[in-house]
Image 1 (cartoon, rainbow, N blue to C red):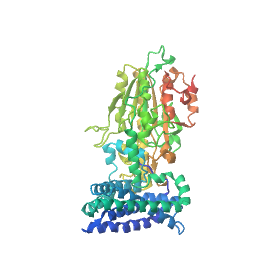
Image 2: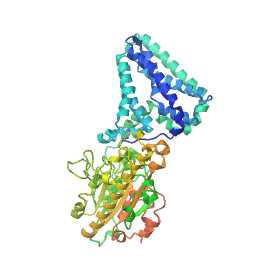
Image 3: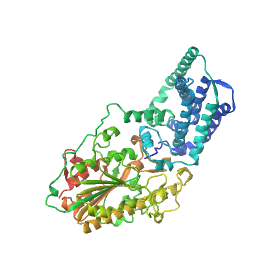
Image 4: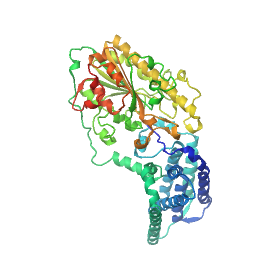
Length: 579
C-alpha cells in the first residue's frame, strides 16, 4: 500500500517564509531557462554545478522548511548558517555529479534524477512525506489502482515543470568534454575543491549543526535526492541480500488443540477482521463526539479495547508484524518473511484457514493458506462501483462458507476500510451522513472539515460492516450450530490535518498518535466463551488497559486453546481471565 509520512515541523508558523521560497525557486529557474533557450555548447562542469544549485534550491522546499524550523526560523543571526548549509549541499552534490560527468552517463543520469526528484518533491511538499526504505517498500508494493488515486493535475504540473522541462533542456544542451587525461585532472580538482568547501563550512558551523541534527533525525529523510536514492538502495539490498533464507522456517508445527476441545462436537468459526487506516479516536465507542458507532454501540457482548497501539504506521509493516510472533521491537521485514506466522500455526493445529481480501493483498501473511480476492468489480453488482467494491462484499458468501465447512475455521476479512486519500469512495451513498465531504485526492484543495467528514463516513460504514458481521455470526451460531467469535483491529491509523499532517506512514519513532492509536474489539457468541472457560466480565474490566498488536498472535492462540511452544502466555489477553 502506498502511504505518506508527514514532516514533524509545523507548517503554520512557516507560512510567513513561503514568499522567500517562491522567490528562490523563480531565481533558481533562470539558469534552466537560459540553457533551454541556448543552443551554444557548454562545458560539462557548468551543467553539473547548475544541476546541483537547482536540486538544492528548487527540489528541497520540504528540507528547508524542516531545517529552518529546527533552527527556530529566519533571523539575521541564522542567515550565515543557512547560506553555509546551501553551499555545503551544492558542493557535495557537485562532487557526486562530477564523478558521473562522462559523456555516456551525464545526460541520462541527470534526466532520470530530475524526473524522479520532481515526483518526490511533489509528494514531500504537498503531503509532507519523508522518504525512507519503508516508504520505498510501500511504493513498490502498492497496486496500480491505489497509485492512480494519487495522480492529479498538481502532480502533473510539477513533474512537467520540474521534471520534463529540465530533462528537455539537458537533452538539447550541447556539452563540451575535454580530452580524457585533461578531463580526469580537471574533475579531480573540482571534486577536491567541492569536498573541501563542504568539509570547511561543516567544521565552521559544526557546533550549530550537531545538536540540531541529533535531535531532528528526520531531516535526512527530507533531503532530495539522497533520501530516495539511499532508501531505494537499502530496500533492494535488504530484499535481495546474500544469505537470505530460501525456505520459510516453520513455527508452531507442534500446535495441537487443548483440553477445552474435548467432548464438544460443535464446530467453531473465528472471524478476524483486519481494518484499514481506521484510527481509534474517531470511534464514538472510544469517546469521539460524533456518533460514528450507532450499530456497534447496541451490540450485546462487544468488548472494546480503547487503548491499542499498532505495530507500524503503514500496511506493509503492520500487516506482517501483527500476524507474526516477533512483536514490534523484534520485527523486521526479512525476519517476518523468513518464518511462518499466526495463520500457519492455526493451520498446524487442524483448522481450515481462509483469507478473503477486499484490499491489495496480505503482504505475505496468507501465502500458505486459502486466499480469495473479492475486490474486483463485477458489472451490475450493487456492492461494487466501476472502480472497486465495498467491504460488505466480504460477507456475501460467508454464511454458506460457515455452513458447509467440515472443520473448525479461522477466516480473515481484509477491509478496504478508510483507505485514503479518496475517503469518499470507500462507502455507499447512504452512509454519506457527515457533510460536506472532500471529493478529491488533492487534500490541499479541501477544507479540514470536509476531509474529516469524508473520513468519519468511512468509520460509520465500518461500524455497519462490523455490526453486520456480528449479526451474521450470531445467526450462524443458531442455525449452523457453531460457536462463533469476531476479532477486529486496524492495521494503523491516519492523520487528518493535525499539525498539518495527512495520511499515514510516518517513521515509528516520530509518528503522531493519530497514526498509531487503533481500534481493537471482540465479540463472542453465547456458547463461545463458556466453552473455552473465559470470563467475559474479566475481559471487559481490562478493556481500558494499554494493549498492542503484539497481543494479537498470542491472544488468538490462547482464545482458541491452541498449545504450542510458539505461544507466549504473558501476551495473551485471555490468560488471566480464565474461569
